Image (tube, rainbow, N blue to C red):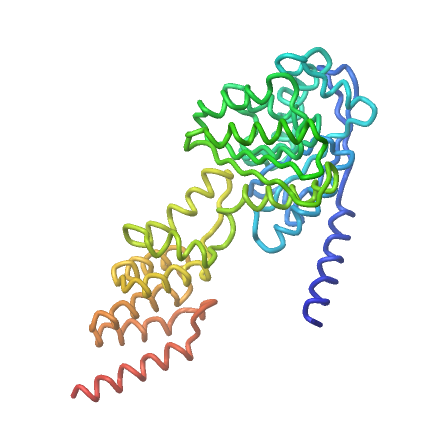
Amino acid sequence: MIKRAVTCMLLMAYCATTFAQISYETFESKKLNSTRKFKIKLPNDYDENSDRMHPVIVVFDGDYLFEPVVGQTDFQTYFDDMPSSIVVGIMHEDVRFYDTYSDEVSGLPIEFGAQFYEFIGTELLPYLDINYNTSKFRVAVGHNKTGNLINSFLLKESPLFQAYVNISPDFQGNMSDNIMTRTEWLKEDIIYYLATAKNDIKHIRQNVLQTDANLKLIDNLKLSYYFDEFEEASHYTMVTRGISRAFDKIFDIYRPIRDKEIKEKVLPFEGTLDTYIVDRYKKIEDLFGIYKPISEEEFQKIAEAAQEREDLESLQKLGKLVNNHHPTSNLGTYYLALYAEKAGKIKKAKKLYQSALAFENGVIIDKEFILSKVEDLEMTENDND
């Protein structure tokens, strides 16, 4: 109980620091012929002189959605459940009606809405890319009318965003049909999240449920689709729950390997497990446009799975792979020694364990443990003699 209370206090202090770091910027838009305001929250570890890139989360309805998104982003980043990201909240203030103005038939932006649509794609996003260390991965978050709006960016031949968080979107005209047609022919990986609630606005809920039924029929490997219908929630109270669930799904692969993944994907994997872990982290890099190093803890989970599979080849290859990723650690050599030991090559295993003593203590294995392995093998050799 005390530990949990301390954790909560630390997180509250962390969040207080987070919101103190929010800044406001203004942008002179030629498309809108006006000055627009937006909020921006940079990651706590942001370094403008670094080559490290960060995904961008663009929050429409930033007047009230920005803070919940920032809070969830920093919370999940704290536990390494998602990459540190740049959050941008677009403030509509008294022009929200015009920003989201759409055609009654197509549901697409027209007139003032079309100008705002062009402002996002041709002015704001390029500005962010020039001035900040942005990766290629962008997330659009919308609610109600802006939920309808963000789908317009999906309809472009090359979508401006790679993930869409639609929280109780008020689909206009044929927008639902547009989404259905577009997702059927996607050629790029897109993550699409849709949510409503039992107590949502009636016509919105009906349209969302119909859109969900249609999207579940789409057979396209480029589409990763997720849906939630929240119990005992309204059009507004569902917002924070939707953001949390959406980020869980969007950044699922970025998370450290869980027991479920070990059971469902790692253990039954056809091939050696060094291939699995390399492919997994390559997908993270390809999807989010960022490099995430493979930690010793992750290697340990895969090595334990290799032993459970009685897969000595994987254990040997993991040892070589760890030596490439963590050359100063003793972990890679330890795996090579363990492989030799399990293969019955006692003398070779002993030499490798002794070699591991020359390296630094890793996060997983220390020299005391390795010395115990050497002593065990010496006893085995004496027994054999």
